[in-house]
Image 1 (tube, rainbow, N blue to C red):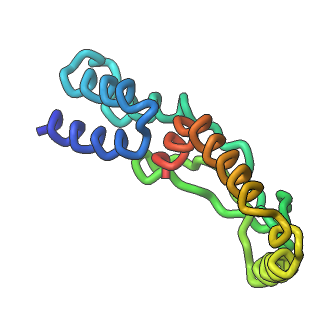
Image 2: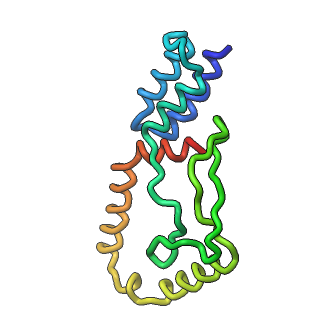
Length: 146
């Protein structure tokens, strides 16, 4: 039963983290088959994922920059599997949302994006896609923590 449950969870995580799927699945199955008897499955899963994930930024992203919330309030991000606090992130309150919406409206009305031709937009979107690919393991690990 434990092996089937771990296999189910590893399949779910593998779909979210293709670059590290084999390593994660192997680790989970090793735990299920007793090859790491000194650790619980929960601890081993945490070791695998946390070793890949590092929270690098916890501020709000508004107007193309990272900023603290106006109130300075933060809240904890909890790993539901372990109930550990992953990090504290800035809490966006209505005043922060207003600033973000105003910045988005200004950006929308700006001719900067409008003046970029189709080739330029393609290049920017390809650059973004390449960054996602380059950091896919780290992004998948971060996403699977919460």
